[in-house]
Amino acid sequence: MEPLAVYRKTFTVGMRDVDFAGRMKLSALFSYFQETGNLHSANLGIGLETIMQKFGVTWALIRIRVEITRYPVLNEEIVVETWPQQPKSLEFDRDFLVRDRGGNVIVRAVSLWTIIDVHTRKIRRSKMIATDYPPLREERALDCRLGKLKPFGQLEMVCQRSIVYSDVDVNEHLNNSKYVDFIMDCFSLDTHKTHMVKAVEFNYVHEALPGDTIILYRDLTAVADGLVYFEGVNERDRRVAFQSLLEITNRSDI
Image (cartoon, rainbow, N blue to C red; front, side, top):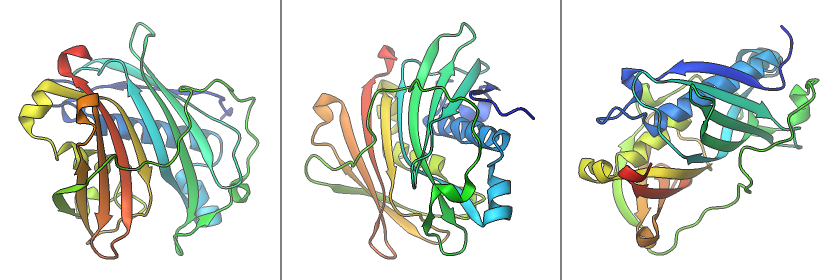
């Protein structure tokens, strides 16, 4: 199979991927990204199964920012487009675009990945899985820097969630899309009926494992400016599992 600089996969938004209004759920978008990114990595010779078998490492998403112009709807056909940048010493940049059938870009995202040892769970250097990339697209989906996130003011506990079978992926830890569902569930249905997320940023700090309980905290200090901060703390060791910043808008505006 010829290595591709840019990989594209077509999805049809299904019933399981949408909310009560027939619009795609944010967690479904993250799942589309994950699937398309893994398929492209396989095309480049560094897919999940390959690097696990040959090097004993697996892919882990550590940071991502997503900006949404429009949410796809039930039965809509979309194309997810992805491409990597040249690897850094410990990190792999990967960008995403989502286009509708007319070719219009409706979602943009930039992400940062690393590889971790499947036994020690420690980060390994990117050169371990070095491969010959085809000529890469230098364009970035978003002009931004993925950095640290922090609350604006006082954090309040919202809820806690135990990690169970249905939350766990092939890495045997809480899947990145499940974190999205966790924070979305912290808003009431009435709030979801009036507001939607137009941008979201995640920092995945420490992995969470089956049996762990994540305590979710929220900061509404800047909600008047459309910003909501979330933080998840692992009850077992009190370490921060993730941080997230949401930019929200009226549902009618997106």
